[in-house]
Image 1: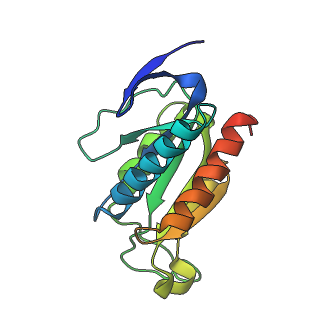
Image 2: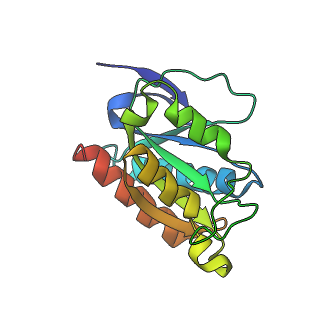
Length: 168
């Protein structure tokens, strides 16, 4: 099936793309997805077989829809109470993405989740992504701290591109 989507680089077919759905609370995830998109565009300019990235931000105002393309989910961790180990978890501010993934069959198209957080919180680091993987039946395939860095962009892009190219 052939689809066309507008990106910053113009129109491209969705057979050579990575689709990301994310939520950004403090702007860190948005910043990382922007950096990842820029990195993908540079990689695509060097070799057009490298996939471009399209992304969709989910917010509290998002109308839920049935996804039709495989995607990767990006989620930060924000908790209010509980340590995530022995006294519970109270997810905060990212619930809408979890609800969006759970909507109808959207979870079935998720190729994996990438988590972010602050390593200072030890076991709570990327806890939301780990919980999504467990609750919705897909893998947590990678993680990065806060806004990430250039090596995170390269590693995560390569990981997603490999999964898309090999239908993993």
